[in-house]
Length: 92
Image 1 (cartoon, rainbow, N blue to C red):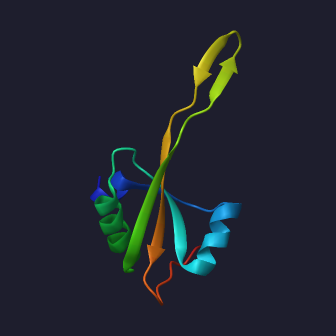
Image 2 (tube, rainbow, N blue to C red; image 1 turned 90 degrees about the horizontal axis):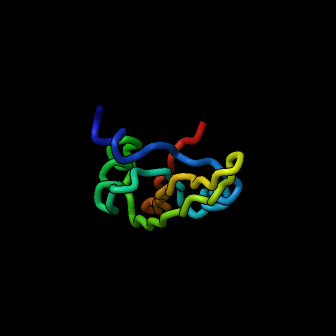
Image 3 (cartoon, rainbow, N blue to C red; image 1 turned 180 degrees about the horizontal axis):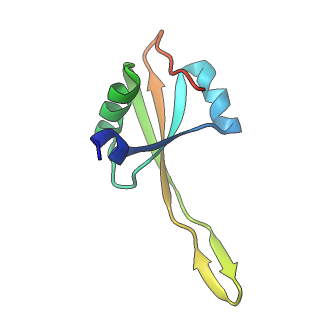
């Protein structure tokens, strides 16, 4: 498995992330152990763009009840990647 696939899981296309695209920002679902430098390198290699800034945050998993047991969904890490001026990622 390549290094890019280990760092970036998916490019998220949500209602909120669609408002980011006008400011050259894109939302990625990334590996929980990936740091900002690894995310920047992976995005630059995968999409052939120049990354200006990377902001990360962890979405904590919600508590869910399954029958009579209390369970928990997994925590996910997301990254908001800002591209340099004039750069763009083609979203299909």
